[in-house]
Image 1 (cartoon, rainbow, N blue to C red):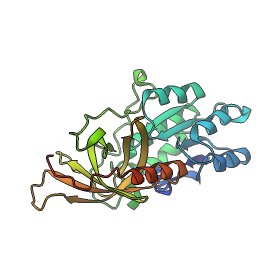
Image 2: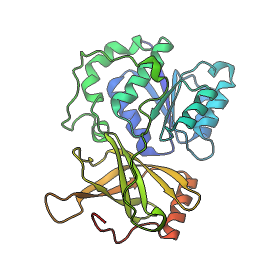
Image 3: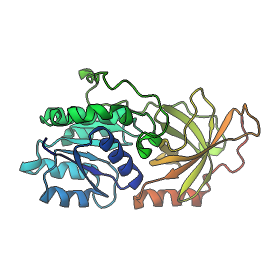
Image 4: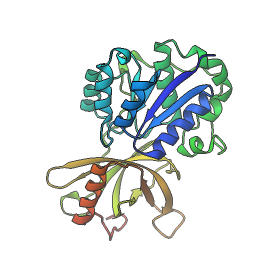
Length: 305
């Protein structure tokens, strides 16, 4: 069986580990390398051949879009599958990536099944999928858990997984590269002047408006309305923040470090989430610093206010 090589590019080690674990579970014969930014990936691509690149968009030194543009300018990399795995899922960014020559698009946060389906499609286009399918078929159940905990623990967590014999549905042509793009969530009730301290949290099972109760360079303490599907510890997520008079927006990648009831009762209508940041991008760290300096957090949040 020929080796299939994949390059995973992301400045967040948590995301790199998440993607690599998922790929190894489903494609045990795959060779996987990783890079912390576009510059490091560029150096690897210049000296090694890869069958697929899975790349973040926002990274220090060289962004994913800049790396994609460079790849399409190289004769040896013009047709290499290049899939963006990013929190930039809005239409204008998708169009920009398509114009630059992207092969596919996966929006963060993603389920393992969404990621694997995109990888299968990309490898099928270059005739590399069949070499992996036979070995991979025995690993389907461990790769398709729909939460980040399963991906990090190698399938040891008890999760409900689809049957290994079930065929993977083909992507509908009409949807193109849009892989479940983020849907604009309704804004929460105003809790301060100008809506400061508000945002939306994108989780694998949906989007929830949230209020920022406390903020540091490492994590944010969020309050969300309880819903039918409870957030899970170690779920990967994206925190979208729009702050200031210029509607400055940031997409912060991370995971849920803790989930507790906000009210001291078993039927609490509100949950308090500790959202731990994983980005190493200096621009995002600077953005968080400015939010802290402005006193963005709603320190005296009252449920129902």
